[in-house]
Length: 100
Image (tube, rainbow, N blue to C red):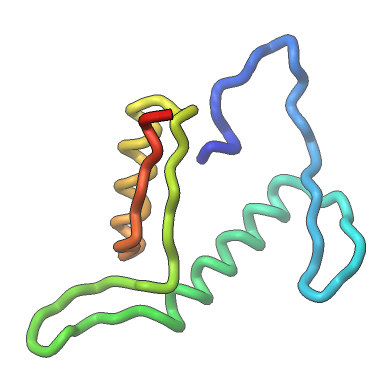
């Protein structure tokens, strides 16, 4: 989400991002669509592998393998939406550094 923040119109948006494959030594430029697809696949894989549905007789629906650290550079509305997204994924390690 922070990748898509409002920006200064005088500064052009990047149309490519740098990506380094696992165990690779060099970086390559990929499109935003390809980057988001890779990010989503990694989140899904990690969440599926670590998802905890029950803790005894209590349904918890959480993952302890993903954490989120918010940014003080985003607006309240963006922070709210990020928190909702993370909670929807079952993330319990959720922080925000709003006091910088």
